[in-house]
Image 1 (cartoon, each protein chain N blue to C red):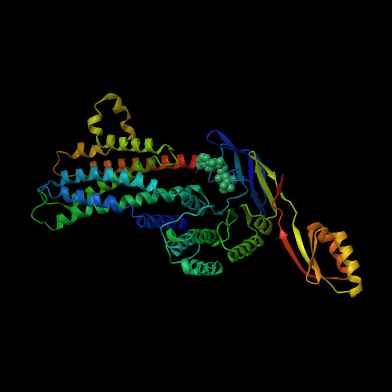
Image 2 (image 1 turned 90 degrees about the vertical axis):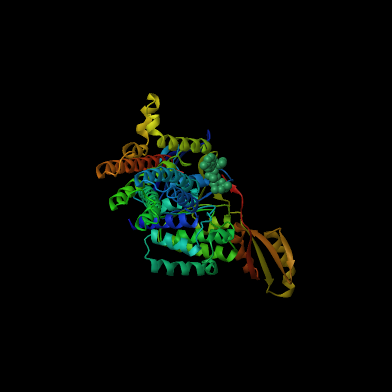
Length: 241
Length: 281
Ligand SMILES: Nc1ncnc2c1ncn2[C@@H]1O[C@H](COP(=O)(O)OP(=O)(O)OP(=O)(O)O)[C@@H](O)[C@H]1O
Ligand SMILES: [Mg+2]
C-alpha cells in the first residue's frame, strides 16, 4: 500500500514537473473569466456550463497524460510493485486525484465570486448548497472526463490518429447526448457514455440544485469514470507493453 | 524460480521467439548474448511479465520482485535524487534510509555531483548509472540487466561488477543481456544466445591468449639453447629486452607454464591480450 501511495505521489510530481497542468488550467481559468463576466449569470446556468467545459478539458488532460507517458518509465514503475494489479490501481487513483485537483480549481472562481459579491455576478445569492452540489457535479464530470481521455492510450490502440479522432468523437457525443438521443441508432449506444449532458437536462430550468438528483448524477458519472479506468487497466493488463 | 513454458512472441507477423522452454533456478546468473534485434530485450521483458508472450506462459515459484536496468534509461524531468528517493520509498525503504543509501551508491559510482541535476540534462553514461542505482537500492529477488554498461567509464564498470557479484553472493537471481564478453565472464555463469528465435546455450569460446614475458635466470651459456626450446613450445615468440615475449593460448598456459619455469625462465608478466569474442553455437 505504501508503494502505491508513493507511486501516486511520484506521478503527481512528474505531472507537475512536465507542466501538463498549465494549458488545461489556463483554458479553464479563461472560461471561468468569460462565463462569470456575463453578469448577471444564474448560478445554475453558470455551473452547468462549467461542468461541460470541465468535462472536455479533462478529456484533453487525460489524453495528454497518456500521450506523454514514457513506456520504459512505466515498465520500471510496474516492476516496483510485486503485483501488476497494484500498479494499475496506483495509476487509476492518480488520474482520479488529478480529477479532484481540477474540480477544486474549477470551483474556486465561482466560490470566490460568491463570497465577495463584486457587483452582482450572480442573479441570485449563491448558497452553500449550490456550491457543495456544484462541486459534486464538477468532480463527477472531471473523473469521467479524465478516464475517457485516457481510455484509448497507446497500449490499447496503436493507431494514434484514429484513437484521437475516436476520443474527440466520444467526448463531443457525450456533451451533445441529450440532443442526439432522439435519433434511434445513436440512442442505443448512449449507455456507453457518461451522463454528462443529463446535468443540463435535469437542471436547465431549475432555480436550485436538488440533492437527490445531484447525488444520482454524481454517482453515475463516477461509476462511468471508474468503469472506463477498469476497462483501460484490464486491456493494458492483458496486452502488456 | 522462473519457468518459461513454450514461449513464443510475434511482432508484426514476424516470430521473434519460438517455443522457448527454460528454467532459471534461484541464485543462477545467466547471460543472453546475440546479434542486435535477436530478441534479448524482448525475452527479459517476457520473463518479468512486462511483455505478454503471444503463446506459452511464464511460471514463478513464488511472487517475485524484479528490478530492471533498461537498455535506454528514460530522461525523467526530476533531479536524480528526487527520482531515486521516490523509487527507494516505493521499494519500501524509509525516506531517511533511502537518502543514505542513495548517497552511498552515488559516491561509489562517482555521480554525487550529478544528484541535484535534472535527469533531462545528464550525459548518457551518467543516466545509465542512475538506471543501475535505482535497480540496486534494495536487494530484489531477480535482477534484470539489459546492456547495463552502455556508455559507462572503466572505473564505474569495475564498481558495477563488484556490486553485482556482491548481490549474487546474497542469493539474487541474475539475468543479463549484454554484448561485452568480459562482463559476461565476470558476472554470469551460463550464457545463452537466441538463434532464429530459439534459446541455445552459448559458450563464449575460451580462446583467450596470454602475453608472457620471460627473463633468463640461468647460466649465460645456457641461454641460447633455452631459447631454442622455448620456440618449440610457442611459435609466436619475439625477443623482449634481455628475455623473450611469447604468446600462449589459455590451454597452453595451463599445461606448459610449469615446464617453462622449470627450464630456468623467470616469469615477469602474464597478461590477457585477447578474449574469445567468437560465440560458438
Ligand atoms: N514493441 C515492438 N513492436 C514491434 N516490434 C518490436 C517491438 N519490440 C521489439 N520489436 C522487434 O523485435 C525484435 C527484437 O527486439 P529486441 O529489442 O528484443 O532485440 P535485442 O536483441 O534486445 O536487440 P539489441 O541488441 O539491439 O538490444 C526486433 O526486430 C524489433 O524490431
Ligand atoms: Mg536490447
